[in-house]
Amino acid sequence: MSSVIETVTEMVQPILDEKNFELVDMEFVKEGKSWYLRVFIDKEGGIDIEECAYVSELLSEKLDSCDPDPIPQAYFLEVSSPGAERPLKKESDYERALGEYIHLSLYQAIDGEKQYEGVLEALTPETLTLKYRVKTRVKELTIERKNIAKARLAIQF
Image (cartoon, rainbow, N blue to C red; front, side, top):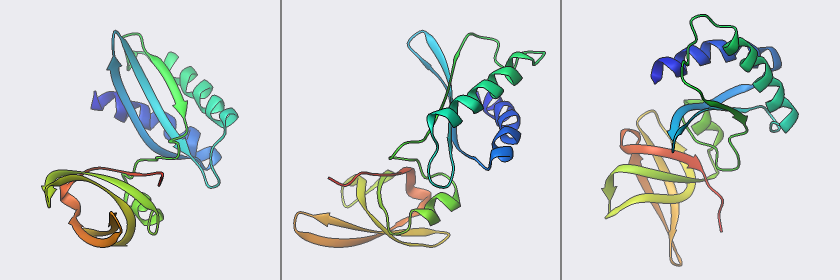
């Protein structure tokens, strides 16, 4: 499946560059009996539905004109915003999230927990520091970045 992602990334990047849009993430997944190619895009100030439709239309035309077809099976193309809980994948995502409330899923538990939510306080190439609450107390935890399975912005309730 990574070859599909690589091929589609090469196709969509010029479309995004032309409009100063950012490719946030992409996935090619099977859900039930159907395949989905999901492309998540953004820009400074947020992306709107017309911009998603524009990218979808141009990408769809490019995909349809390829021979051989990079995705031989039937699939649904979805182009959308990453939403309020945007994933943190690239270094620039983490840098932009400094001071923001985030959710982390870890490969190995720390203090018996594999999931944390809190404010991203500091960032180094090897670690990040999270300020989080346990009931009424505020704690700080430094986590090795290689232990982070998934990271995303989170909505604080």
